[in-house]
Length: 136
Ligand SMILES: [Ca+2]
Ligand SMILES: [Ca+2]
Image (cartoon, rainbow, N blue to C red):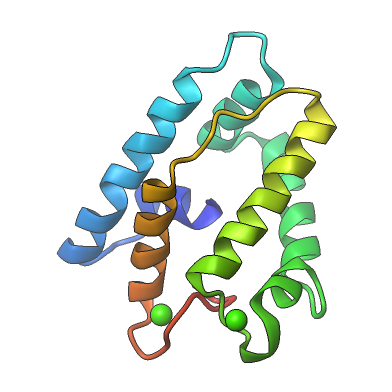
């Protein structure tokens, strides 16, 4: 997700990449519009979108936990160090459950179709491997 925002804000994507990521960002905006104004999850998304300093600090912490050696990414990606679609779905479900536990709110669901498209968009960032690597 961090990558999607970065791509939209400061990244110079190729035309094809832009075409792949744009509808994803739009779908994310629409999904997050469904939250109530006082929803923590909705507020998180707004902070993330605006890239507030608090959010940057939190993001750094999360990224560190997810991408460190033996962290969440390694655990879900398995021995090949690449995230397959099924592994991405498992990771997404797990993180959603964690977010729900943290906020005590029910997350607006991400559609399978969205996840599939996001997976393909990320996978295509590096066409030389099948799956998503840490660096994508
Ligand atoms: Ca794998
Ligand atoms: Ca790939």
